[in-house]
Image (cartoon, rainbow, N blue to C red):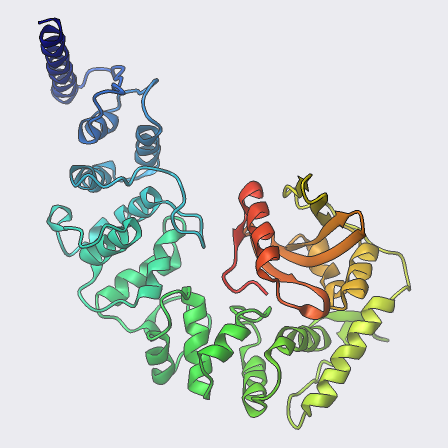
Amino acid sequence: MKDSRSQKSCKMKKKELRAKRAAIIERAEKDKTPPKIFILSQKVRNMPVAIEAAFNGENFPYSERKIQNVIQAKNKHPDPAFLKRIFLHFANLKIEFADKKPTYAATGSAPIDILTNLAHYQGDVIREVETWKPSSHNLQKQVYSFARHLFAKYYIPAFMDSAWTGGPGSLYMNWFVQIGQGHNIRTMNGLPIPLTKKEAHLTMEAPKDFTIPQAIRYGQVLNLGGDERLVRQLLRTRIGVNFENNEFWVSVFRWLLLHPMLDVAHYAPVVDYIFNQKFVPYRMDEKGYMVCAQPNLSMKGRDPESLLRQVEAWHKQLGKEKKGSFSQWASSGIKGFYSKNDRENVIRMIQEICTQKELINEGRVMKHCAGSYAGSCAQGRISIWKFEEMSAEGIEKRLTIEVSNRDKSITQARGKYNAIANASDKYWLNQWAREAGLGVSRYMI
């Protein structure tokens, strides 16, 4: 009898709590009374009710983190009413969308952020929010399916999904909406390079794991006669998605296609050498202008073996450079990495390089061109890091790492002689990335 009375009492309390919630919401809507404190019971969690209360301006001092995320999204959005419809629909479908945990690893975006971005385009919606039904249990697929439900009258390739992982008003979000309405990608505002009809067609066939800039490079290179393998290797170089001086770099792509037996491991060093010789000023001429080493460098008639010898000589020059004072620059502010394994008696450290002297020494020891990045480091665009393992046998240098300071992303990681990071090294890079809040490029060199 005691248990029965206890269950009955619990049901009565829940019923009374629901009635109080309903009364608070009704009074706030009718009388526009000042916000009330709304406490979401940890035993009686009702996401739709909580969302209603959140959008009515009520406070949640002891509520779940999810509701705080909803309130934060609502306060930043210019049209909370439409955002509320989206959140309520997902909540009614019992889809856990409100966590801030990134589920889109390449960009660190969370579902609630993407749904918030979608709500900025209310004027372009072609279907009602409430008519969408999920066809998958995968949250990422659900969110992108919802995006197509709202905006896509015509086919949109999967790589375009990455448009929604940026901030509100992103250029690529506009592209997604316009392509969904039937516009050709050739007509998009802000294209980094003009596309031919064939290049536009091939761009729309890019692999689903590509970003939008990578897809544009894919269409361009395939139009020249290349393939996906070549594109993926080019995406690992500094010109992967950098479209400046496009006409010249097209000649480099054509040259690579003429020499298919060239080891792809040489792509990045060759591109670095060409870029440095043609586009990086390094001395002052008699008229006082800064000039490049080979401003008229051309790929016409170049022999692969001869070019590789020049690249090797340039690397040696970088390693032996001793003239002048060594510059230094401010730290990027990114957290380094330290891990001690007592069982293996190994210490692993990732430390930032902030002087030109140390950068040149890193390149000399690792047999690559790290010294060529001094200018970019001094400008604050990137930072260079060294990954070392210390044990009873001494110090073993593992990797030299490039980080994009603006994007907070690891963009390159090379071992000795430009060797690609192995599985073990990538594991520790990912550990560092998680601790330091960094992204990891899919095409990490």
